Length: 86
Image (cartoon, rainbow, N blue to C red):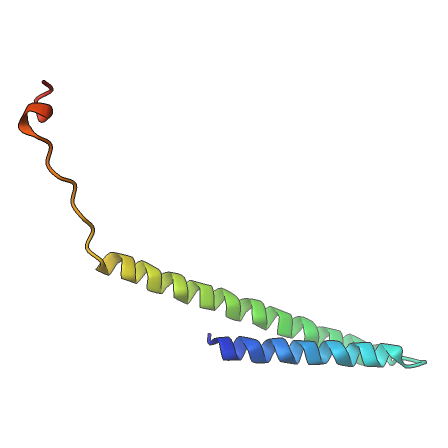
């Protein structure tokens, strides 16, 4: 997932949060409307978490792929006298 997508989700989440606050400030808040907004806010939160998880997984996979493509140095052979136990 791109960071733009995650940023858009975070902004939408914040917008729903502001709507909840505005509705709750009214003298007689509509509890059904508040509940639906809270469900929407939770849905955005879950989508943000999933997008971040996918981003971390993709980044980790790219790192693993890069690590496999970079040749690793081979250990130097031990001198013959050391290898024989002298």
